[in-house]
Image (cartoon, rainbow, N blue to C red; front, top):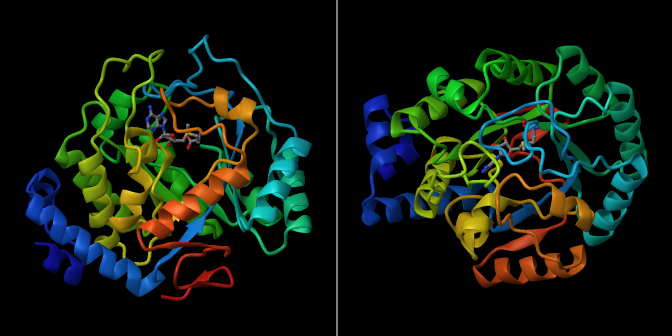
Length: 350
Ligand code: SAM
């Protein structure tokens, strides 16, 4: 099945479901080998780094799985200033980061005008860097303004393409329809777009995952973010088990085969459930890691789930350790904007 998926980049729905549900180590190993070959064809052994800046943990949403949900009164809220964010970029640039990812809860405190001003300043100081936003659902007009200011990429996981599962994971006032609308708007406006989902989200079945993969085939994203669901004690899903390491690794391989040139991170959540999770992710087909450049006080408060991977190490020391651990498994971290293969001058060429 691995060879067929590699050749056809898709499987009929029933076979896809069967593959997702498969626990056979031989099949998983064949998927991993095929995925590594495809990844090497497009990206060699390069690993792109993104400097993640967790700019705010204020959030208007109340997603049932998320530690910074609106109704979690135990969270100490913070919002970084423009100067704090630019200071993170300065440290990151010196270390070789050429992409900055601004991620946060849906914080009404960040107006379009504030973000425009911030992005313009980032682009003025670092014209050779990409700016990625991960700030949730906004209006089309807002996405247009931020793109015009210079933002290059936008990450917005669909979370669940199946409406029943989406409804189980989110409060009534949120809609899958709007989430999908946002993703298509972002694409049309010209962002490199990332979507994705949590592996092992409460109530998720292989059929749900197949629906996500099929949705992604239609969207054709440049980036896909998947990581295991990890529980947070102050959420309604506190008692639900975390997603599994093996299933996440297997899905990374499946994604590499279905979307050969996609930018695929080995996520923080993967590094949280297993000490060498990110290295295993890279060896399963992923090609991106997102070290955290946030100030320590923000890292401590941006708790999406318990035990989130956050070393107390300085950014430089953390990066040196990551560089070493990637080299130990045969890959190297590079200083590069790291656009999607086939993406030149703001356009997709293949
Ligand atoms: N507000 C933005 C949004 O909705 O896209 C960005 C921030 S949001 C916290 C980033 C991602 O964290 C979500 O897309 C979700 O998949 C992930 N996340 C939230 N809670 C999680 C949990 N308990 N376990 C694993 N991932 C989680």
